[in-house]
Structure formats: structure tokens, C-alpha cells
Image (spheres, rainbow, N blue to C red):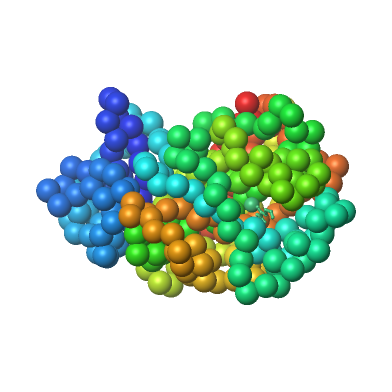
Length: 281
Ligand code: DO4
Ligand code: MG
């Protein structure tokens, strides 16, 4: 089952896709309209199944506008969880390279605050590059949707937009390289986790004036750390009563001569979840 948030006449509608059918789970007597409610109960997957049973079926999604898949949750991110990310960062930062090498191998992962919900954009909304940055890339990442108890409730698609020039100048600038308006895209769908359906293939294309200027792919099997281990570290000394989204790091890094430009269209596809598309403003 997949779920997504939509807007209809200014109201949020939570839709479940089951097979090729769509249900308005916010219409059910035991339903939900917000992600906060879903992530604060002990067994969100069963609650969703119950809500689908009492929900109105939708013939079409045509009259709905897709919204980001979160409401009040913070977004956190993991770093250097793929060998490709380590190699790229060692290349871009002469003085900082030992830190990336160490964090890839260390027991404790790199975790950082990525975004407040107000700075997250959804499917087909523009992402931004910083005006004071000369080298900018998208980072396609599997995002974990975690309940208030730290359980993986689902998976969505994330883009951890990043300035490589600012991060490369000094790793202490990472918050500025990573955290700015519209630097995080998520969605549109959340694949509900069932314990056996960790998504595998991740791919990304960047199109410029209709021409593909980058494409790459990876697999979550190349991640150095299991997703639940990242979640456990995140929850070890912080609580998230409304749940939280956690990006799991990038395994796709464009070559060093590539930088995003205004107008570029970024498409990230994760098997079993769908495609997140954003244009660079
Ligand atoms: O170490 C800096 C950030 C790494 C990151 O965002 C990633 O590996 O995806
Ligand atoms: Mg990243």
C-alpha cells in the first residue's frame, strides 16, 4: 500500500493506493487526514488497513493537487552511507577528507538536521540552488518515515539539494551547504513498510532544455548501514512525538564538472515508490 497527501479546495486529503485503486482514508470513520496522527500510534500500517475498509473510493486523482508527504515533522539526513559519497567528498575537500573517511567506517553515523517542514517542497514544486554557491547538485536518497517510537512506517523519495562548493571549502559549513529555502524535496508517495519491502533501485536523471545532461543509478543494497540502525542512532537521545523523516544518504554523485542550472528538471525514481520530479528555480 502507498499513501500520499493531496489538497482539495484548501483541505488536506490522505489517499491510499491499493493495487490500482485509490481510497480517501481521511473520509473513513476511523481514518486520518494528517501524518502526525498516523506516526504517533503504535501500529500505523494496521490502522491504515482498517481506514481503507471504511473509506470512500476515488475514481480519479485529477481534481487533487499533490502536497508534500509531511505536515509537522522535521527532516533529518544521514551522510556518507555509500562508498560513492565518501569518494566524492574526499575529492572535493582537501583538508576535510580524513573526516569523511572516518565517518564512513565509524560505528556512529553522520546525522544532521536537514529541514523544517516549511522549507520542504513536494512533487513538481521548484527546488532552489543557493545564489552564493558555484557548484550545486541534487542528492537522490531513500527517505525513511519514522513513527514516534522510531519504527520504520514507510519509505518515500528525497532530494537533499547540496552546495558542493560551500561544503568543499570547509566541512564546518555543511549546515549552510545543505539547509536553505527549498533545499529539500520529498514525495509524492509513501510506500507503507511491511518488514519485507525495503526499496532497492534508485535512479536519477537531470534534463536541461529537453536534453538529458546526467543520469545515474544505485541500489540500497550498497548502503553501508541498515536503515533501522540509522533510525536507532537518530532516536538515541532525541524524541520525535510527531514522527520524523530521515534521508539515508546518496549513492549517486554527478561528475565533478557537473553543476545544476536554473530550469534543470530533476527526476528521481525509486522502485516500488514512484518518481519525484522538481525543476530548479
Ligand atoms: O557529509 C556530508 C553530507 C553527506 C550527504 O549528504 C550524503 O552522503 O548524502
Ligand atoms: Mg545527502
